[in-house]
Image 1 (cartoon, rainbow, N blue to C red):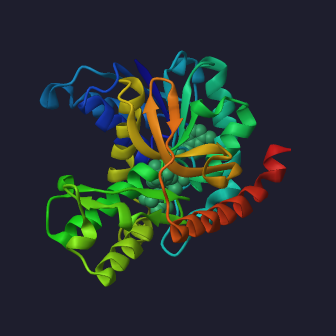
Image 2: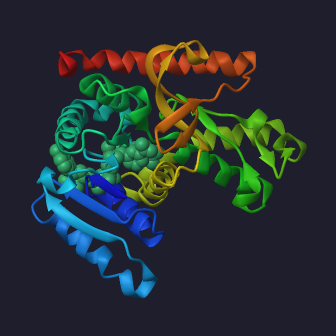
Length: 311
Ligand SMILES: NC(=O)c1ccc[n+]([C@@H]2O[C@H](COP(=O)([O-])OP(=O)(O)OC[C@H]3O[C@@H](n4cnc5c(N)ncnc54)[C@H](O)[C@@H]3O)[C@@H](O)[C@H]2O)c1
Ligand SMILES: O=C(O)C[C@H](O)C(=O)O
């Protein structure tokens, strides 16, 4: 199974590293516009093969899309990340043009591929990819919910003082500081509601910390995060390539689901060899429904800025 990752920067290279280390794909091609950069990252990763013990073939390409031919999955991480104090939405001006041209180029060589969109603002970039390529909705997947949910479980585990892997929870909605919706009511500690162990005040703090999880790391690092983002993409790619049918919150084109139309937004999806295989309808209460509608409004406003790129 072959995976191409466009953008060999922090997130793209970390994703290639996790995919190869965990043997998720037999081949990974890293592609970047910067001369020699992807080749260098690929060589560095390949030099881990004998010490960490993997057999995936990782190679690099400077903007030569012929090397990406017949990829089963293409991950788009190309574009600029935010700096401290910025929102993801401010990246749209530069990233929209990059994501559109990258999506068109990859399809010339891998017409049957599934595209995973990572570049920010991710929900809008997913919508752009879908509209610009005309691909069916199952083959365009926005990655954000997997990462936001892992951060949610991290903050829950800290509040509970229990291991992250004993905590279940999901974040839906847009992948933005004010648009994501950590579903605290449905989160559990090994099957028991977390509200049995945490006060309302603690749960509200967990939700608030989760929502600004990316901004917190950007403030600390000077650029946005990459370890958890790269690993979250690899987790999603694993479910596609190995047909795991995991339920993962992903940004997907909605046509009536959750009362929304003509938008890509994070909702729970079954992810398998056909990409998005099902949009799972979970029962939201009235306040969660209202938050989702508000989140959709904000993402829809952002999508309106795509008019010139899509014209
Ligand atoms: N969806 C998410 O959960 C999530 C998580 C983390 C980062 N991101 C986003 O992912 C993007 C990448 O972040 P990063 O930290 O890896 O940035 P980075 O700057 O480290 O890497 C981006 C790479 O893209 C390359 N690039 C730019 N234009 C290109 C083009 N036309 N073709 C090929 N490559 C090109 C750059 O040369 C660079 O190496 C950002 O937009 C960031 O906001 C999203
Ligand atoms: O925070 C960012 O800008 C990058 C990414 O979307 C993240 O959540 O880490």
